[in-house]
Length: 370
Image (cartoon, rainbow, N blue to C red; front, side, top):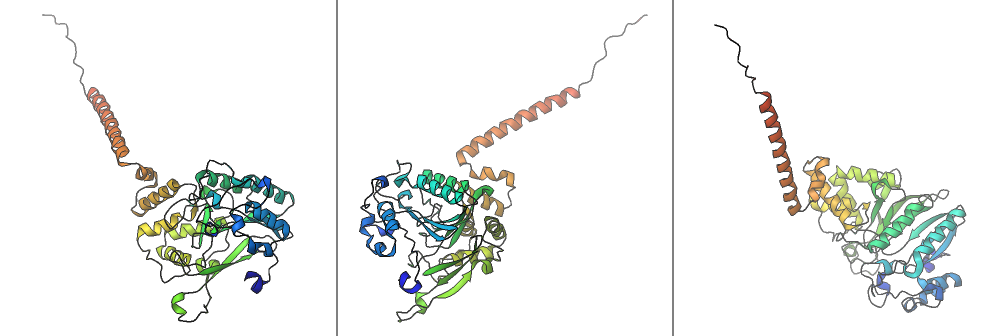
């Protein structure tokens, strides 16, 4: 369909968890030995016509490859299924499934040496998701990937993923270098989203991603017709008043949303392509979940700490007291007991010091002569 209507020269081959015989089942093989991977071999037929022989050979054996789409721009397509926390069979004992991380580093070094730039694409994003607050990748794979991205902040111009059926962004935590990570919506409306697709705009000279527009359709307005009406529902820069899609610009947007629940709810609505089946999100607890998933955390714990800090901010607890929100009730009792003992000791010492200072010196006996 893509080739028929768009006549593209390069079709990006990306494997997802649902492309396998069983969901998340993907057998890891040694790409150095070559040959068709047994999982990929079940779905590789359509790609044989769309990919060049060299691209197809790489895709067929390991599920990842790269494309030259501009003289100075490449697209790196990752196989993310083995990194998933739900991947079967269990291979998380492997530090580098398919040797993909080693290949990614080597490819980025080559891109840098050639004075070029890269877009990274994949299916399952390395994030804590907004749907259930769960990590999508095993932690060690998440940390490895983030370290690679941080090492090439001026080379990697964009990160595009899917899977979560939600249109979202993640900016590197704590001001770390690098571009944002974007998750796109889905055609399949499985999690309350309207079917949607995204068109990205980029600068032809710098390859910076400048904007994106989301097009969607709603089944409820299509009636009995088999034809769906696709309409543009929003563009990021216009909807959120953004000067760019840089990490700095999106961090500023997140900061604005902290003080503007209406803007935050608009982001939530747009995340599901303005679906009429979208569950309400008007409570502080729900909105805080939306806000805290805008930062690219490595762990679920970091995400939950963000929720605790947001809760503390809303009720006016000073920032220096926020860590106390994250301490369990048992340790809270221990901490308060220690505080009470320390205060009692200090009060006792001060009291004794003041008591001594109030003593009067009794004069000694004077000699008396009759």
